[in-house]
Length: 217
Image (cartoon, rainbow, N blue to C red):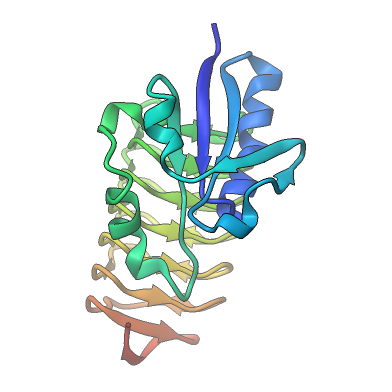
């Protein structure tokens, strides 16, 4: 029997995540998609691929048997993801994990809850992907790397072996991380950057090689 699923909010991440949910259902009827929810009342009634925005977060408590995929976040708002998700006030067991069928995932890779991994990603051996993460298409997380909770990783990102990425980071599309480096919590790596050395927490770094340009936030 398929499990009920609510997606939050009606943003780009959730609409793209819907594509992965639909792909999962093509392989196995796993999810009964209830709809989107969003705090913005002007979006109520909107739809994506036939799935409507049904209302606000009050529906989480009116449909207590539904799982939730909560994937807010953008380059301008990524630092608030943790607060927004915690504000839903639901138990961890209610969060879903969505992995597109095309993802190549090692048997010993660990993937947390409320995490979505989109098409053609590679999650290699010994890796850990935390809770509340978003990984966009064609991204590679190489062996023994660790991605902290509440991170967003863009498309076509290459994370080499034994990289440590702290919680609440935003890794821009097309960027690359050299092996054995660390990126501090709350840091943003800009589009197409090449990270060749450690980055501290709470900064914005861009370029090739990536250099810190300012504090985040």
